Image 1 (cartoon, one colour):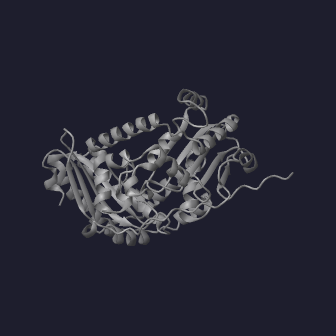
Image 2: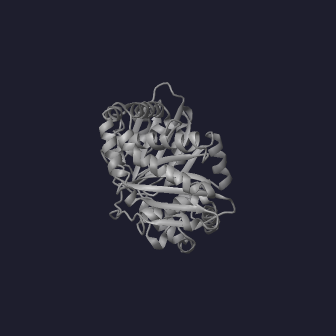
Image 3: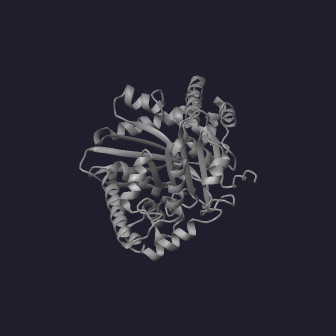
Length: 408
């Protein structure tokens, strides 16, 4: 009998000489795909996958997770949900068995659902009372108002209350089917060995992302008084292309120059020169229909106006003052980061999944680095001029009473 071909929804990345192994199942349905009346359903299913599954009771499952080294994690994002097991090569059989049972056979016991619902509501309350979490929610509402991508992943109290055992079983059945799953594996292992272990998962059809409505930029303003402290948590955001855009390399370089790392412009100006904030950053939030470039900082209420003025100054002057050395540093930093990530099994599985889902190709380090090294100073200037337009920026603030007056 010949070696079985790898199914289309299984990607194996051999990493010779590594004793660690990582397996990840990505379900191409996320919180943004849930109907509004069932918001939070995918997140709740994800929680239940590792509560009881495959006939294992809670303690048995916890003990198996600990035997694997404890590197078992489930998560829900806006566009996908997943489960990852990180362990050693000798535990391949146990890891694949756990993955299959958790994905295919979670237990929707009423008492487990009630418990996880309470946990989700507690998580909602915590996010609402934490200004750092709440400002991120407000920013998405300001940027993408009314779009499913602007909703909290957890859902809300009303929608969580509608999630009965029967409703969750039906939802799980719709998620776990051919064309919705992608498995990525990285370690010192070949595709034949993995294929022979993962025979129960529906992997015979190439996965296709579930579509979302077109994304329109709202560019709004949101603010809220949260927490007892005196810190103002501020965010600005600008629209960008989506996660599959050919502009991704340039956006990554621009983001790094702005607010990633010790030499970034915002960190140097606001913290190192002016001492206005402990932390200031920029980040890319990329989804398939579109994305945003976010700038965030926290400072005292009295320092907010000055901090915001300096952020705006740095944005205004970037195009005219950008130096070749800044682009070189950003490209070097991203290059070395990718080289390290590509050798880490737990990161490699995510890189493989993202490349397949967002760009329809296998992860190839040399291809991505070649795209990165094509980024030029004029290209970054042009991208910055297009993206960093304060006339369309979305803004969000959280902090002490009176912060609402400062969101203009």
